[in-house]
Image 1 (spheres, one colour):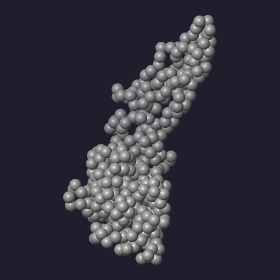
Image 2 (cartoon, helix red, strand yellow):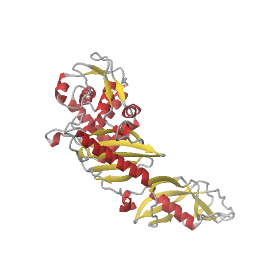
Image 3 (cartoon, helix red, strand yellow):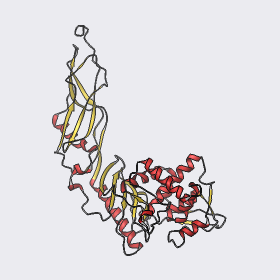
Image 4 (tube, one colour):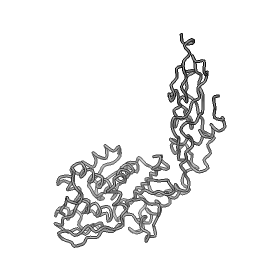
Length: 403
């Protein structure tokens, strides 16, 4: 006997599952944060489903600030891997022209003129202390002695990654007096870059480190670097946020404040980028603004959304007529895959509609597991997803009927 899913149960499953691919606007304004984010640019994505939870000016070009160093880090490890070079064996010396470029900067790692530091040590210095000389040294090294060439390489790689509004001027993200010389990006582009950074084992480990001694060198017996680019990970900080998996803040005086951070708890993960968060009265106030907004948005996401398995692979949801067989005249159809979705807690699903895309009949013989149609999910008159439907059994053709 053909078993069919109860229509009410089917509707319920479809309504819940429909949000798997649903864009944020389909959820309506009631699922926006209860506060208005002050950052000009916001991009918040669930890393389990790659679903955008909230965005604000996500494709508008804004100053990248010191978040530029995330791209420098990615370029460096990719270069080392492509060339088969060891992060701990290759050393870079601080050149006089780089020392002159960063002179007077508050973001330094304490590296001296002529000091030779391993590439790994420079990555730690750049990502823990946001050291500008370390960033410029890496750019000089990978760019074959040319900062400008390295910036061109950064922009080419950003385009390859799918960034559409990004243009880097130097490896560190200095804010120049001339706006055209600044490094620019968008919240969505920076999320693409940061995701790739966190996918790299070397860089993820660095961004999760509290302190690191890159000495001894030819100028130092010990050269300790301490992480002040992500207080969210420090239990001693007033901004400590336990779910944090790694991140990098751009909040020094004279450059655009922002943050890129990943966090996870309870089996759910999020990636957040903030750009051009309002500055405070000083660097400490600016950092407070960035950290607090990041915490507020991440906690809102953790409190407001849940990932659920709403339809298991093999659910029988419909049937189709079978011709040219004496054994059966209908074939049960089941879902070909498990259907998972991130959705707001308590979402009203009554606006979801669904329709079947099936042939009027299929002709025997019929193989088991044959895809014969799709279940389309409609929200606000737009298709937001579909589920393949497949046959659940083999049906032999009647020799008499097919003669």
